[in-house]
Every structure is written in structure tokens, then in C-alpha cells.
Image (cartoon, rainbow over all chains, first blue to last red; front, side, top):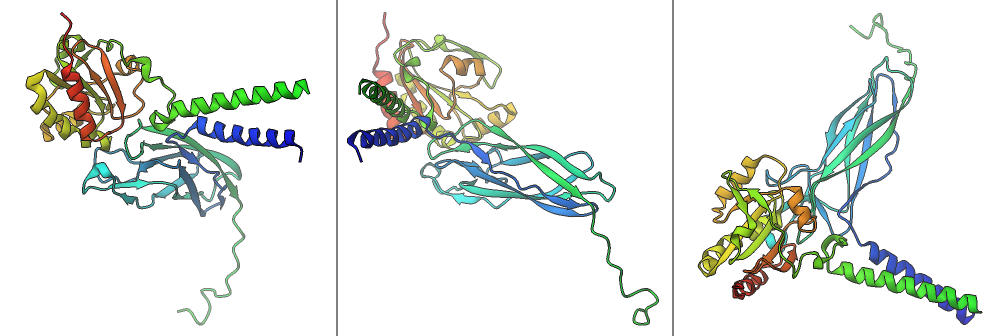
Length: 178
Length: 182
């Protein structure tokens, strides 16, 4: 490899490192791509919302240990005629920080997921519909906290025909059913 | 050849710029890009804010005292950790001309702030913060953020985050040690 090529590669690598450093890190939650729930009419399907807290930060869990702390909450606006129910948050990690003494914070850090159920009525229209929402959170690191923020999210819900019911071999007239 | 040299030189300058920027950001929490010099060494911007009893408090009325101006919120655990220290520091240094002033950046119910102040026996004024005042102080993107203001109303230091009691007390002593201009 020529010397000039080596120099260019070195400078390019340095450039990448310097860019990463200059960007720094912000206390953001990132909503990872949400897989489209495919729901048959008259049925339900799970919804998984995967979230990622930037390295070095944490956010309060959905059930912080102090009532004055702001919980992480996912608000969802489903498409008309579709229901999103039973939103489940993971338990928080109990985090001890030097400034907290014996108290602990209930937090999420790294990756965590919020799960829910998408329910579609039997007479819902077929097709793909866009749902919207937001994640409200309040982040801190080991020394300071950042004002509450929210990050939008959206995903599609695909409504399909329910599979035809299989005919039961047992009928009311069966001699085995009384 | 000449073209290669120019490209190389430009790349070096860009990388150097990014590294300098990165170094600058190291001194700021959360990767903020705000200059500390925005207020340090300059007169503390004056403001009037309301305290928990509904009284107006004007910062410049405290001229002659060393002021610890602490921006905090009830939802901020490191802020809450500092508060008993400030209560104690106010007790110890109040007679030497120190005045701690808390500025709550809570958006929610004022009652939460008042309840917290009562529960923690806060012995210094708690003012209800406004975004306009936060902007005067360079924007308060991180809590706690504390300004140490000398007896002449000049910002001596601005500290992001919770630095530990010793550092707070050292800054307080420096602020008290200043002499008011006649």
C-alpha cells in the first residue's frame, strides 16, 4: 500500500472518531422499528415496542420509587375501530447511585420493551392502518437530570380475514355429548 | 500532487476542528454545546420571580451578599440530594453574607414544590422558575445547575450536575470571600 493511501485511510478513521466524539451523546430514547402486528378480524395479536436508552443514561421506570419522579409512559392512538389494550411495562432495574444513599431508583437503561395487545373487532375493515403514539420519559445520568421529553412512534396494524372456522365433528346431536 | 496536498490539508483541518469541538464538549454534561463563558465572569442577569408565598424576589436586591443560585426540580434525584446540603450551608454561612436561592423548574403543581420544601425544612427562598429566566442563564438543560454569584453580582462559576458537598462548600467560601465594591 502506498504511503499516501495509508495517510488517507488514517485521516479518514480519525475523521470518523472525531465526528463521533463531537456528536457526543444525548439522553434520548430511540424507538426501534416496530414489527407490524397482523391481526385477524375478531382476534387479537401481540404488539412489541422495543426501546433503547442511550448509553450512560437511564430513565425512570413506569413505576418509580418516588411519587415525584416522572414515569416512562407509552401513549398509543390506535387507528379507528382498532383497540390497543393491556399495555405491559417491564419491572425497573433497582439502581443505586452514589448520591442516593440507601435509596434506589427504579429505572430502565439499555434496551427494554413495552408490550400490548392489538384487538380487532369482527366487523373491522380489512387493510393496513397506521397507529401513532409517543413515549414520555425523563432521563438522568449519574450526576444530573434532563427535562421530561417525548419521542413519537408509529407503526402499522394489518387487519386480515379470519380463517374460516373448521367444521366441528362433534355436534349437539353427538351421542357423546349430553 | 498539489491537489492531493490540498485535500489532505483540508481533511486535517476538519479533523482538528472536530477534535477541538469534542474536547470542548467534554466539559459539558450530556454533550451540550453551550459556552460556560456565556455568564461566567459577567453580571448575573437580573430577574424577578415569585416565591412559594407569592412574594416577588428580585435577584439584584441581594447585591452585597454572596448568592448560590440553584436551579432544581422535584423530579430530579441529584437535585434533591443537594438540598439538605444547601439547607446546612445556609445555616452555617448565612451570617457571613451567604444567600442560597432555589429556582424550581417544575412544570407541574406548585403544591408539590411547596410540600417538598416543607418536608425538607428548606430555609431559603424557593422561586418558581420561568423559561425566560432559564434562557437568561444560557438555558437550563441539565439539573441541577448552580451559579455562584459574588457580592458584586458577578457570576463566579457555573456547575452542572451534583458535584458533591465539598466542592459546593469551596465555591461558597470563594463567593463569601469577595468584597463588595463601594
